[in-house]
Length: 119
Image 1 (cartoon, rainbow, N blue to C red):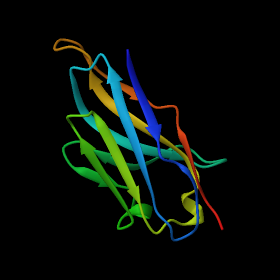
Image 2 (image 1 turned 180 degrees about the horizontal axis):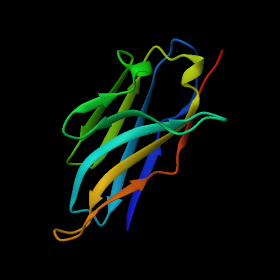
Image 3 (image 1 turned 60 degrees about the horizontal axis):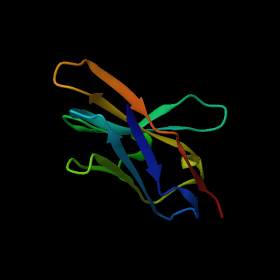
Image 4 (image 1 turned 180 degrees about the vertical axis):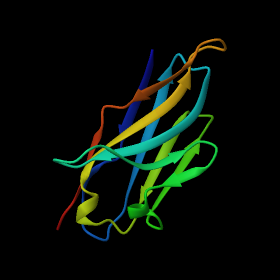
């Protein structure tokens, strides 16, 4: 099995910063991509940023959020700056993983972590 564990969320004031981390562990042969999604109350889950062959960002976070990966640690980070109240959501980490050299690719999700932007 593969586990993704997020950390770093919490309450932050508008204009502030927070860094999310997500560490993948378990039976991992190769990770093709890791990314972050978010889901606000009453809204669908949406892509925030992904790191595979290229970095991809949602338009709403471009210039404010930065995704990075430490491949040795199977960890992905999301540095979030200039936070706005509309960034409030549960943030989910995901990873596209191959568990063995002959297995197919599977997507795994973390449990989610709350980020609240409020004064």
